[in-house]
Image (cartoon, rainbow, N blue to C red; front, side, top):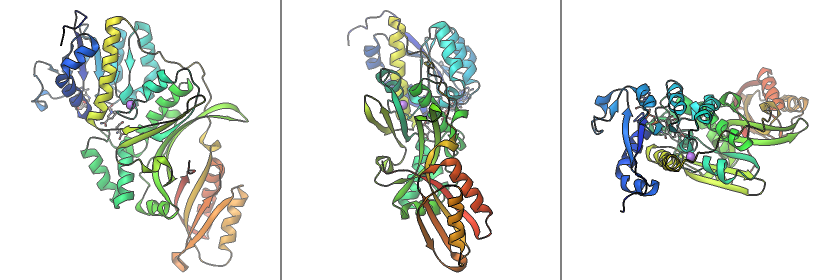
Length: 435
Ligand SMILES: NC(=O)C1=CN([C@@H]2O[C@H](COP(=O)(O)OP(=O)(O)OC[C@H]3O[C@@H](n4cnc5c(N)ncnc54)[C@H](O)[C@@H]3O)[C@@H](O)[C@H]2O)C=CC1
Ligand SMILES: N[C@@H](CC=O)C(=O)O
Ligand code: NA
């Protein structure tokens, strides 16, 4: 290859060298010549901050450091890649890097969803680049299409599967009847799960991603605390079987919508499991794959699909950002700033229209069905189907509702739980439409 056009080197500091960081290091090493050609200057790793250098025998010892603060502050480092995860010290370190004008590439959705505005402000103040394609849906190009390709359109809805770990667990339980615990252990072994997998299974990771997507799509600051969140830890084999009986599979969905109702224009951001008809395109997205629909006024419906977790796929997104930031460093460009001008209010979960699937153990005697039906009617909730399974002490009623507002459905479930004729509410899950 001919000599690169720029007579300088882009020096990179890596914060963290785990599942993602080690793959970034591998790609930077193995593809060094091609990256140089694409950027126009060599891109070299100058330092790698880790906790225990002796755990990295394959990494050049002269690069390893335990002093992550010095790495972030080092004026000779042009781009800091943060793949250590967690809020602190990642926040502090990235602020240090951005304040001195270094480019930052991060995969840390938890940090962005909690402290995004602070990071953007630091980037604006110094003119630094802040890129985070890896933070949502791993390898899938999604942030860039939303921030840049669709910047001239009006996004109305984003809906999809954005957590690989939970999708891996739900797919395994659905397809092969694997236990929840075995499937989670395998997802962790494969490098999909967060350092604390509670973040995955309780929906925090997907909620962080929903916050990032909603912020970008609706030009409004949405933090993780604004996102209604329910995880999958209550999804048992019985719930998966109940979904199957009505032609559905269970998926954890992130849904970000622009809604216009009596209260004017608002946005809804929520993460929860749903029973999804098997005919829905997202129902066949399995394993650690992610898939996200983006609906925009002029573009129509777009679907993004691909590996949403794992070391190499996530490193691919990090590398794409690194090349962009390195190019910007050489020619003086900058990535998009925060866009929060619309400042739309949030729609509370109680106002969201939804359908419920409710399974409850009931007394099998005359009048019980009428009492249950009355409870739904009292809350203005219309029943779509009702089915009794078993008799006597084994009688279970399965009710699927028509669409009602979530608060009315939740109040119905509360009251059912207090009725003497209802021995136990076994499960409650939202049901999605077929499209
Ligand atoms: N694994 C995946 O599939 C994906 C991960 N991400 C994000 O990428 C980031 C990294 O994830 P993984 O590589 O999976 O995690 P990991 O736990 O495998 O790696 C993180 C590494 O950073 C090190 N580290 C943590 N704090 C440190 C500190 N203060 N100083 C030095 N080293 C420190 C840890 O020892 C560990 O080796 C997280 O923010 C995660 O949410 C994003 C997309 C996908
Ligand atoms: N733990 C996350 C990793 C990618 O963001 C997931 O399972 O999706
Ligand atoms: Na991505």
